Image (cartoon, rainbow, N blue to C red):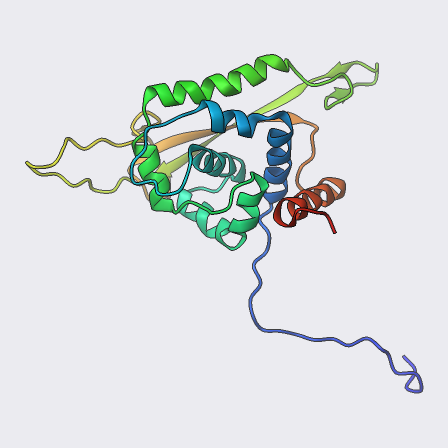
Length: 234
């Protein structure tokens, strides 16, 4: 660099921490845009009803989108998921047309109060949508071999994780305690992880549909997020 022509670039530094966007946020953005375009969000809000108490201003759709994000994130616990999502809570809820993130304790009360009719109503909405679109279009996804034959490849990944069980309050004036994860947990080898039971989490993915690390997908996700939060793209 010549000393006669000093550079016009100014470098500034700041010691304050900046939260990085979760790597799964782009995938959630695209899913939210697709569900909104197909009318799934409005259908869930209209068709799935639940007699609730102590849920405040929140609706069923608020808890459903939280669980959808949790399933996509792959975070090991709900606490870790909330801590990762909290700095971006307004943008996350805006993707689904909502305004406020339910507290973790409110979500826990919602899950504890679920009944079979509610689960069946929610399942029927997704089942009806799945039957209406029985597979991808001819030019979407898939792998082609050397003979130009197209194959649809799915990867099923089952992960075993150790889960801890807290002591439940017991007393003559309290109802019989029940654990929500009893149906999905069982005694097993926990390895070096701290826990009393083992649970299995299965993830199904279709290849090759790139989500993470794809520049066009990330750019599209950023545009959708801007439109959801501010009503227009920059």
